[in-house]
Image (cartoon, rainbow, N blue to C red; front, side, top):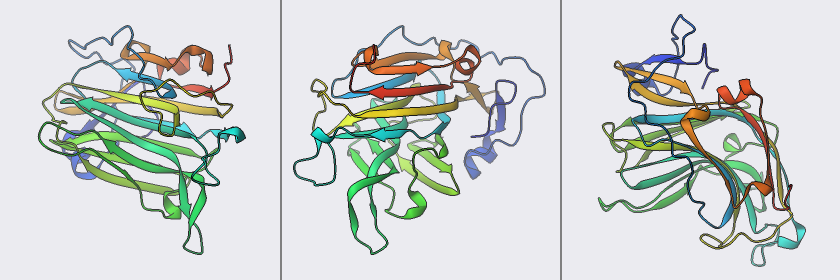
Length: 290
């Protein structure tokens, strides 16, 4: 996920599928690319109860994936919300991730605050680092829902203040490629998703969240947990245009903006220039900020 050059870049489809997302070429003019018949995003979408989250979700169109560069946030936990069955853990769990929906199958793929394996080989009682995760829902084909983490190895742990690049790309029918790299570490995984087809329309998203244990579908639980100063440097969408994969900025005209359960729990700062390349600084607080 290199920085966008002149607002977009162009990659040969064959080399991208063979080698992963590796933008090595860019167009030589400074004109914003025009996508014929591009679908506009919905004006608004309903919140799904159970977590504090900010989501930017694309229109339902012929997208191939999403990428972004983010500086990981600092976390302060609510000491009154310790997990009663897991000493050292909390009932709030920050995450930063990408994902999509295609063929009636949802994916959430990125980083979540997780336990680690200590130097002595024991699993930590506390969650100590951001670690990759991949989740998909079930599909009508019979494919089962699944949630998995990257192996508990230090080369797959990331920490507050580190800059990481994440991408999620549809490499072939029924397969997406997830890559996260930064601070000298890298994790890459091809993930089977039967609903994701090269010929299909779908949507892709970027999410910052405070997830809450065993609370999915329920009203958010009051908390003093805060996730401070995540900074997205850029975000872009992938699309096939004239037999080439084009990376276009995830700007305001390409997403529906969601802050759930309400805007009161979010502090979002971005200049006009930052908004134009899908960048912003973001804090989430369980205590209303407004």
